[in-house]
Length: 459
Image 1 (tube, one colour):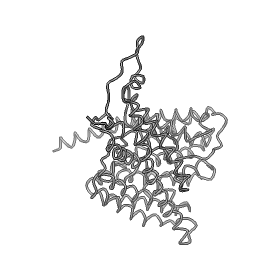
Image 2: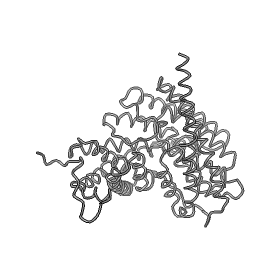
Image 3: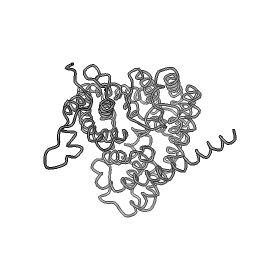
Image 4: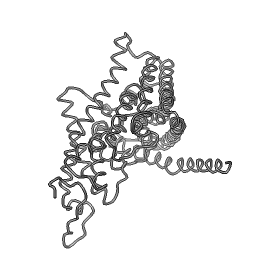
């Protein structure tokens, strides 16, 4: 026998007389469940420290490349060609991680996100691909490497003190670690927990078992992030919007225009993902060349945008996390030609990044959705903030098959304006999700199946 904590499932307590217990009540009465909650809370602390260090390094690198170094060389903003050498370097580093390190640098962004255990031996490749690509201009976000690092380090920290022989226990600790790692980047521990639960596809009794550890580890993670930021004085950038001048109530035109906006965004996302699939097919055969080529496409797109608009190439490169605030703060400062150029060139960089580089798909989708919303706000009666809110919601829901997490993320981002904007957010999420999952995806899969059948009959 051993005194080591047991993380696996334990027998359920007998139901109380006089009624049937719900799943949540049964789980709460399981012997050892409180120990699992304490284990999840304990995991949240070291995982959050790792995530804080990762995000701080990412934040410092990004500001050094795109702000401090241009100022050092006498540029008020990065010149049009600035992105090219940095993205070339980033493509090489990501290519090295994919080609020669275990785990191929992490999951391919075009394949979507999942919550699964990550072995410790894959961490070096994930770190090199993320730190080599994201701050140097890859049009992807940090959420995917954060999920992987949270999963990996949760298991690393737990195994010396608890047995994880049961797959259910491993999945619980993995989800708790991922929630803790995401607690800061989305600006809310609640968003992190909802995102992880929906991404993991957990429902029924399993949801009842995992939801409390995810919520607890997310809360602990948020506290650690806040404390580390105050103690070290080193800020990390979380997804956030400034206070926006939202209308007191929605007009009928705001609601009606939301529907075609969400449909257009869903169709546009399909074209972007089609480019990502095309890039992935070539990256499978030649990962280093594809990573370098994709990085150069991003650099050229950023340079073309800067030459045409006179603005910084940084607005096309990078995840777009820092661009959502300016879009929301002053919609009138973005002319139609600038918005069109931003959408076209950032979508191009986003598409090739999805197939050949490494990172998350959420932040660029939010940014492109916000830009598309502002572009639509020129329509009669469509307010800028309702359009921006609906665009962000549609962009997120079209990229991720997680409608609840998409809605919660955008509503939490809107802050004090959320009560007024929630109806258009929910409508946009539903329209974009239904269009993608029930119309566009089946047609795409049918065409793929027909092409495969034709190829098979030809051979």
